[in-house]
Image (cartoon, rainbow over all chains, first blue to last red; front, side, top):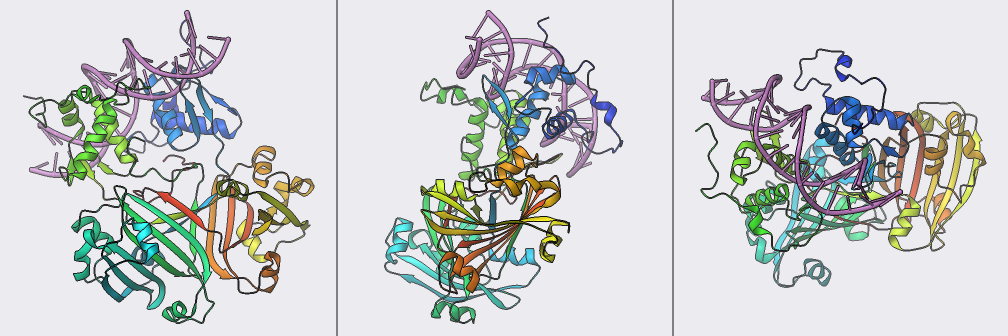
Length: 270
Length: 270
DNA sequence: CAGTGGTCTAGACCACGTC
DNA sequence: ACGTGGTCTAGACCACTGC
């Protein structure tokens, strides 16, 4: 009576599906996973087009505790497949239209991904009494800064030209480092206790002017990505970087869509 | 005795920290949240530099059940702050180096984001007996295809030129649609039951050739993003698109890093 | 072997939305 | 008032890692 009706006349017994003994850690077909798969199946086959069964319904239908049914739904929500509204219910969420994101990795890692050799050359490393206005604006700071210009090469060929400004008061020691050996990110995070907690960036496609093209050894008008990036430590801007990346350098990705938001990061309180 | 020692001599009472009654949904300082914040605080202040307290230790220290302590750690792991290894323990995870991702939205949404008007013009819409070899390869199909060429404009100015190929056997009805009124994505997902489950894409920066530059009303050599994208429905390629996007059209983003992987999408079994 | 994380249970109380 | 999701408890068994 007070007990919610089953979704199916006959209970679903997840244990009957254990095809392989598999011996792996959870039965490889854990109850929670099984429920998730059933829900996904149901959404594919249009069995569920809008609203999904509630936690209690699922628990009854699959013969599990509410916490387990709940976990399945919570995970589906985290995966962007479903939307849960307190007091109302759980609803299928249409995957987001074909957006794509194009990931800009640190040079060294990018080289590893592509399976090519990586070298870098420091073109300039010095302090500036006052940063250029644009830099000052992005750093919210106009005291002494450090300017580092580097050229990153894949298989000896220049692919990325980096013009980096660091706050002098926070990063002075960078002036005395061998930037061809150590990554700036490691310096900041491990040695200077400046964890990266936030990134702002701006990307366009451009053609290289005379000076910049020369750096790459290409004629004027060569295509490139142009990136500005500010990185923050706890909401304090620490570095401002300008990148030019060869346009031919393809960024390739494959992924399943489903979320509007960027990946959960250093989320404080969701 | 058998009981794990407390981390602190005195128990932590989360309730004492309730600064604002706040009246919001969960006490705004739920036990789980409080534990997470303490862990984050501990990692920032170098109290935890490698290993974190175990579930049982946390439960005892905060006077909560193991499930609650566990949940805190699980969420921290999902946020990329922590790594959990079965049988060993929970360890702090260094946020990933400054990678960034640059999100390519559907034109209409992109216009909304920028707060400009959006219009589109269909330049060509017809069927092809056989697709060009490159298209056939990406679609894994060389039967009849539909070719749609469109120009997307922001405030009347052409910003994105789209050359799209659709599998004729799956999307024939697209030929008879008003593509200036309906989004192709909606057609596929809602009318043709072809949900988007996977995307592959490839991006470079280029300079426009004579023909393409003319489409934008720009001189040859104008910079642009050049994107190829294949979209899948359940691992079957459905459309192959080529985009040219004005290089001046900036893509801007701000986000907190922490993960290596793209956002969780239609993940089947994690 | 003891300790870790992974899964699950059968309850409980609360806040919220709908009727 | 009722059903929903959100939080939490105090147990339980398992699989894995370390010594």
